[in-house]
Length: 271
Length: 313
Image 1 (cartoon, rainbow over the protein chains, first blue to last red):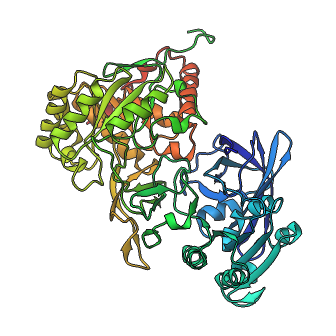
Image 2 (cartoon, each protein chain N blue to C red; image 1 turned 90 degrees about the vertical axis):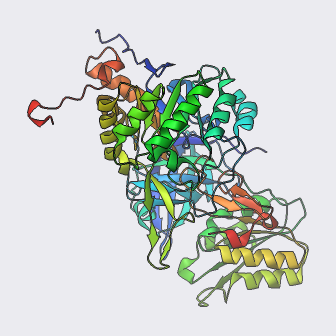
Image 3 (cartoon, rainbow over the protein chains, first blue to last red; image 1 turned 135 degrees about the vertical axis):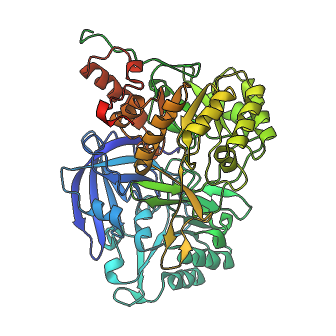
């Protein structure tokens, strides 16, 4: 199914709360929302454009759509994000009733696994926000394993939501404060060693995605990665989010991705 | 003027009739159709498409952009589909009634002329804008726009290649913008567009490296607006050519400032990234301003800056 046509609107903050550590959960009422595909994202700027023209920081921030539920004249769209700078800091400060400028959904969504084909979803840090909807939809017609990793327990997000999906969930933290101590890539190696027939989906830091791509390739399994890059627009005109391709040239993360078959990516050229 | 009467927003920019003075700037508006989900392109005066070369071009490796205070730096290196793909694939999907201005650049003067000739065959294109000013192409733009003799040769050559309305987009990275404007006027340009991005540099102190792969980039956004206003005003005093004002325009008030400083029309650039419908809102805001001030024609604002007599130099 084709991804829905994006909209540009002022969303209204319904809830903005701490999710542990530096992570936040933002719930937005988005009138006119036409749905989204798993892995798609929105561009968010704190403040209504009609009220104030904010210029510093100037650019909106790309954020994965975590999930959405029909509400009012549209949907409540949920975003999980980590406060990492001034832009996300301003988003962390928006209060219920205030407005956030939104453009989206943008990007291509994940292709769901074939019926009966097992799916392994591997996500690290804020990359977790990109795979929840995929887990929820893939679960309807296939067996889904979700492997989540982060530095510490506080850096994990959405764990209870994944638990209530009824998927096979395994955690890894670098300090051992939740799940197994170590990297989530080790969980993927163990999973594929047991059952080497799965399709692998990955979203997280570049070194993690690259390692997952290598592990999958060694087992001959298809691997889809969701790339991140700095972008100004999110809809294919600033050309800022170029990702180098293994075949030469560049793809735009926002328009051609963010999903790519791992073998398409020239990892050494990523910023 | 009665309150019910709509003000006249039409302007003539260098022989290009526009329904209103709000265009969008080359390099910030793709090939137009990217904005179709967000904006009726017939609401705005028109758009300047991404700069074209004879052959398709890849851009620079990432990182290509970096945020700056009230602005952004970019070094895309003028990635584009090439003039033939633009004419065959991009132009036909633009709805009728949308004014399209084509931007062009090359690394040699002969190349500019060749692209201009090719574009001039297309009746769907309302006019040409020569990019003489891109600040991040090692072998292209910058030399043309920074040296008056080279700029003269370029404008002369493109002028010979086309009889269509011809704008020249000027670099701000010069000492005397008036001199560059006069060169364009003397060589037969129909108008000038200014300013392009201001050359800049950002550094990561942790790695001691430039942030952009290209080292240097072009600064755009509200950060450059006062520089742009100043240069438009200086250019308007140097020549009688119509001017298209560009630089950090994000609101109707910003656009009106440029008209007051002598611009016949404006181009909205970086603000399109933040809000893909902003150009339409600027059109509405200008109409509101005209009504609120009882101004019948938007062209009455052009060059209407009032400087107190004791402040004139």
